[in-house]
Image (cartoon, rainbow, N blue to C red; front, side):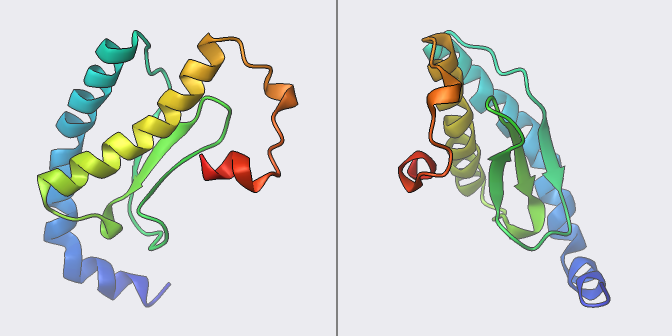
Length: 117
């Protein structure tokens, strides 16, 4: 815990700048996917500070929530757009599978091929 506090203090202005950019970028990309694929994203998107792990991930359920770990992201808008589109692509994959009637009970969640997607 003691090591994280100085790291955050050093990056606070960057974290605030990324935090301020994310809502519009997320909204724009989600809207573009929704229009292109006739779907609606209904799950939460989380902006997290403090994990110093992965930069972003989907999690929690079959139709996943999305989390972005701000301290691991770039300040550049294009980089942010790419990581946002990437994570929403994972959620889109599951939404389209659901829309087409996948039997989730038949998915081998332990298979590396499943997680490769």
